[in-house]
Length: 189
Image (cartoon, rainbow, N blue to C red; front, side):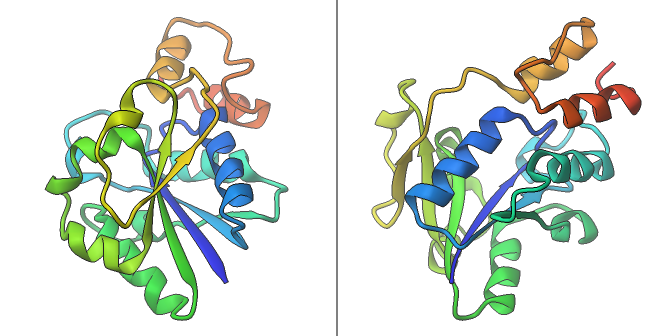
């Protein structure tokens, strides 16, 4: 089994996340890709986010109906900070025979050396660096990592939160189900 693991804050999840996930499934021939929303990311402490339960629900809405994807709440259910090494260790225990691929955006490489046990992360899964044609592609990646070019989608969770706060439409940024959830729950206002 070829298993992809795609972690992140997903605050909120958007079409860029979904397209990167689709690209990974197709180009890496993954049997399954699991989105793992973080409860509390160590390198993002102190930043306001939507409650974990809401981000989990929105991630489920993002991939709803597509059997290639699932959403795992393990980091949200685990207390404390979310460390990738712990998540990957859990997947290794659950799926010992699986070939694991850990998807990260090129932007996280700036902080990879500050992660908990980065060498162990590289032992537990093949690091897949999602790259775009935005200058980040020139960053050095670990020798064992795979560079996976994805479509350039100029959308970010930060922009989406700002659009909601300004009362602007989310059409084309997130699926309608996610936009409906944001509105119904009064998120990012």
